[in-house]
Amino acid sequence: MKELIDLINKAHSIVILTHYSLDGDALGSSLGLALALDYIGKEVTVFLNESIPKSLEFLPGRNLISSNCDKNADLAISLDNSDLKRLGDGADIYAGAKKKINIDHHTTNSMEANSLWIDQNASATGEMVYKLIKAMGIPVSKDIAECLYTAIITDTGGFRYSNTTPDSHIISAELIKCGIPFARIAKKVFDIVSHSKMSLLKKTIQNLTLYCEGKVAVSWLLYDDIYPVNAQSDDYEGLVNVGINLEGVEVSLFIREEEPGRFKGSLRANDYVDVAKIAGKFSGGGHIRAAGFTAAGNPDDIIRRVLDEIKKEL
Ligand SMILES: [Mn+2]
Image (cartoon, rainbow, N blue to C red; front, side, top):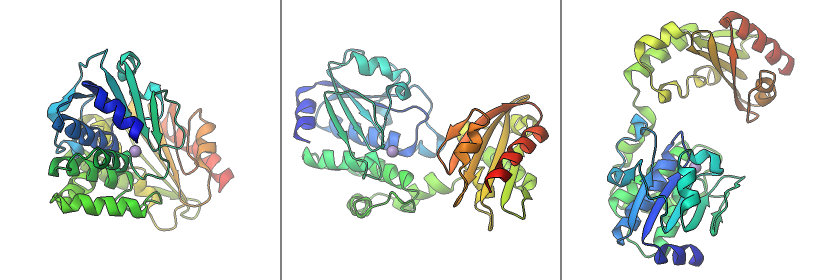
């Protein structure tokens, strides 16, 4: 911690970087730290080269975001990112900075830095940023608290995932004391559904079909379902869960036609099936209970081929 603070104190221009395909922890921890460093007079920017998901548009500190950052900053701080490639266009900015700090909670991390702080027990990078801000003696404003609270609730699924710790709750309690509208934040992050997502959900539920005595749920969206509703990438998030959360289901398969004839598949399992192995048969991959793949051709054929592999693993 002393080493980190020393590097920060010596720097004037600081660029904060995080992984692409932004999530609540990536953006929340980045904006929370940026607001804190801005408060103590640093020239700080958060590098982003993608649009902010609608569910996170409410986060404060967006004036500190830029897609055009100093390539020779005094200090680059990488947050919530385990791999240089996942910084996307930010990789050059990280490489060009005079000093580098890497703060993350992933189990594997291949980032090089002058100072590393990896805590696999932290539920979110936002938790670590909270500890850093406190250690630096910077007051946690309501805006900072909103950012860090969002980071923690998104990475813990609202304190429901197994990565939740007493610290996640203790820090969140401190953040709530700052007067943040926590119920409104949770609603924005977890509950509000866009009109296009609602259309996709309706169709996903309509198409849901059960196999293997109800142990396997399959659903799909065709290009003609997706194209007219003008869906954004985060509108697809969680559609595979419609099947996996149905009572009695062990494996859920969801495919969507990204472009005519090209499908993206998601697989989820509840307790015992290794879906990474199944995805591997289609040149995909992932984790044992959550995996994905891509496939080309006719949807009935793709579903039949994946079902054959699922049956072998059930
Ligand atoms: Mn995270």
